[in-house]
Length: 168
Image 1: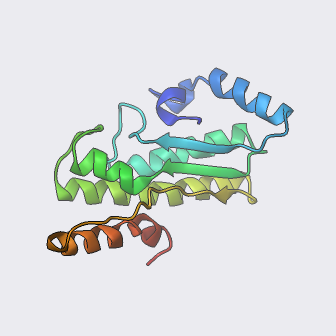
Image 2: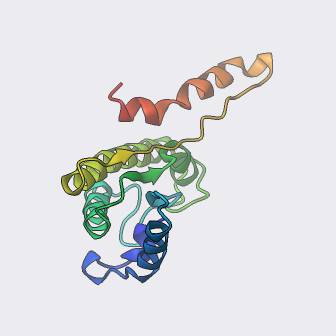
């Protein structure tokens, strides 16, 4: 990971690249091709959140800076498991920003999806070979007959982040 909140917690101009520099250089020396993640079950730095409409542009700016620093990296996961993160951050209230409502869930999911698209555009402006390696928890749901409607709904929803990223 080259996590946004760890590398540039205040401002991109003040980014501390020491941690990712050391690890990515070692991987490069060993000829290991990393998949670089930028946001992993989080909301980025404290000055933003998944509910912030500026989250996509902020992540895109960070992604472009990371790609410029490591132009040899081809594989990227700008946002890890956006649907799972939207649930835990916007619906269940477990992760920051600790929201517990459907509107926050949808905002968090849409902002992460838009951030993924914007980040990949910024990365590909530096490295046209860059590939999106998207992740999501696609676990299947099972339940009793009484819960059939909920199970069906959950099994349809598990594809939502993929549907959004693919323009469905």
